[in-house]
Length: 578
Image (cartoon, rainbow, N blue to C red; front, side, top):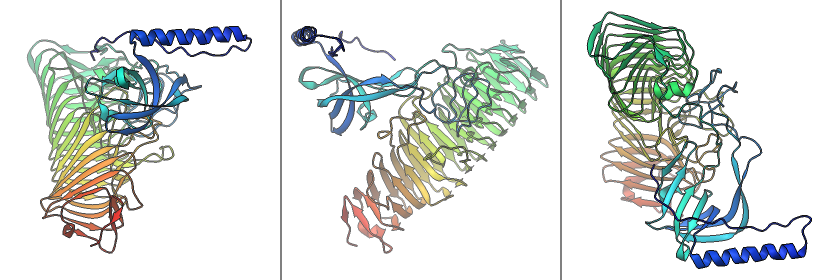
């Protein structure tokens, strides 16, 4: 991102006592501090400080002063994350990382590989200060890979900030620090796609051909900048190692079929098989690249080998595909860094590995009239400022929780922000109209460390447990924000929708739920006591039937639309008299 010029800043000089120092030396040190402070005040130089947020009231932040020190060793890696080329422990759901070790999976977009050093620790040193954030304050979010422009909404209690204060204690700049692991990035920052056994770089139509690859970092077929029609072809990538998993995840290295450099590819009645790491079936990379694929079968068996993969702003249109993957980190409909646009109509999309949802979205993905099944993973994952839109789809997830760490959540649909840099920070959107969503393990929806909208209309929901929706912070062991300030913010819109189950909104999270057009919610909200801010809006055609005591902060609607069913409703701490 582009940064504006900032004024030169002088570091605050902190005097330290020498073990062998004398009183004269100490006095001289204090004199230096006083003189430096006086010069700084006279010149109007902004002070840079490291602080930890204690409270936020409107645009006023109260924080305690301190400093960051290096942790003695690396923190626990986000599930599925491993340093490049090291043998990892068993890792939870999601997408795997660089290196050739047998890596169980993580949700894609977690902390990257590389020779990372330990994280940082905040140590309190000073007193609390208060400062103001205005429209001119430059807010930057520090991520594991680079930075991104932020807003006041990205700052929470317990966040560690690096601030520059101007006149009247108004912040001129704020950097929201990432205290997780730093270090090298497992993949290349440049586009690294390896080689190709067969390359098509001129416009043509081809049918009944067989393409195969056995070499490392090699595509079986690459379409490079050409307009190509491929009919009744077979593509196989059965041998050949991937030297770097992230180059395969991001750029298409080692994929069976790679379209790149603005290629326009139409694929009909194809059969694609892969058995190697990064053996993504059909990969669309880069802005201007479009893959149209229909009536085709894709099978992959190794980790980090999705069915259709879209990254770097590419586009994929898929119709009536039969996709099945076996490995970890191998979503059937898969996207990664740079995202793009994916439209799917019809077909079956099945995964069998852990960390392999039917859909993993760091893109804008729309799916209609399809069957989506994840046999050992959550069904759908959305990361960051991206979306999934379903229409008349049947979705089934069965997340394998055997490898999870203590206090980690199990869910069917997860919406989150990893802070890895794989997905832009921003508002996520999940929309489902018609069809069904079935959870065989865990909560139906889980939102953490992000803001999102969940829209449901005429969808049949089948729960594995009694939790319909959990909006909560996480332990941050995966790098998903800072513990204590990494809750979720969800807007839930139910239109002509039946909802059943418990909703949990923890104290660092919020929910704004609207029930309209004949929607019926049978369930409770925070039945064990007060949590985060919850507003419920209910129109005259909809109902809420309590199944437990419920605690909310605001109600927009008629109490006659709420049936107590023998339980209590508390609004902003006050029990409602029905």
